[in-house]
Image (cartoon, rainbow, N blue to C red; front, side, top):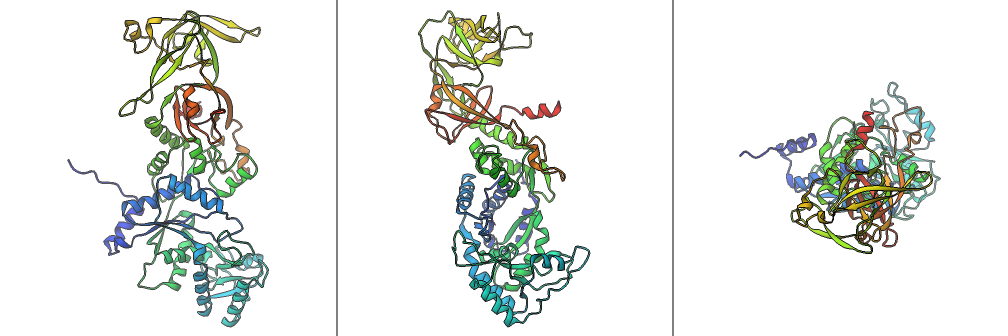
Length: 560
């Protein structure tokens, strides 16, 4: 049988072509370069999977590099969270790098550009620089400081470094071409003055390099072979290559920047600025709120690293941006959890069942399988008693033939236990059903081997024994936004589309063994959905987060 040939994405085609043209495979090196100014989100996960996936595919090292050039927005908290997220996704980096490690080298190269007449200190205001930069259809005009002497530029740049000037009073600009059709090439800023303490370098520096100057040079220092960026950096490639040309030694690997499309996810936002607003304005409880598209939020909600990697692999790498329906991510989670999550019983909207012919005070144990998908199926024992909870929606006094759950005069099987028959109901003064009184078939116990245990009834219900059940806080999460593209409206703020029902908290009842579950453990609440133990959980106060339902309920809502 012929071996299946893997279909390559366009990034892999680029690498394969480079290898055919003589590039040494041993010189392949990739990197994931986050800015430590927020938590990673699902969009970053695709980039992580791409870069580290290429590393695995080509047996090449991958660096984790923090582009920490803006101390006004960066914190050690974000560095730690990023490292945790990458590790949790299942990847290992070869070197942990920081742009701040290269500040001295970048400064020295900037001095070299000044000496070569290719950089100058500009003393205009930011408004003046913006005005003289022109427009896409109108060329820019030279700064009045563009032709300062090398000596004056060197002196001013050294004094900038020493902290003699206020923030915003001077910048260092590359001297390229104010008539370029690419506005990024119109003398871009390389350094700005910023009197802020850096989370790694402290107060050593008060000038900080800009992203475009830092990124390509950092790639070069680390000898990155392929620098993979999202499409918004396509226009930056010309500048990336110009900066590299100024320092490139032909005996070294010259990094190649290539761009792929960002994959936007429906019913959410992935802009760090907008995610920060959600946190700051307390729309959510924090960066790891399970409604957030951050990796930490998805982890807390119960998503597995395998499901996120599967999602990234499924959507693939493309050259054009498009909107991915969040239901695909939910499908990947559901598919993975189905294989791994133990089946347990919990009741979220309890209705009391009293089995009138069951012995008073008796407790017996029934055997339940943990997961039928296991290679070697394991089992646990569950307590069964006279009084039980079932879901309120699983009972109707009167129902048509298509209602296969419990109704007066009808029979159902209690999962792993007996067949019961509803005989009558107890109501309060308002007509609300308080109890359903049932009888049970003593010989119908599942697995007992009697003919009655094999008797077929159309409905099977989950349940918990009231004397043994434990109260739990169940956090039922829904999509954070009601619109597929909440930030796609020019005339409206994205916060106008917050889903008011994105979180509901209910007091449910769980089988007793679940109080021992550790934070992060995932379960299938039978006939309800997949749930994860929250970090807030304790034996005294168990807390579970809903990950996804057993099927895509939103698809049905959309059809309606």
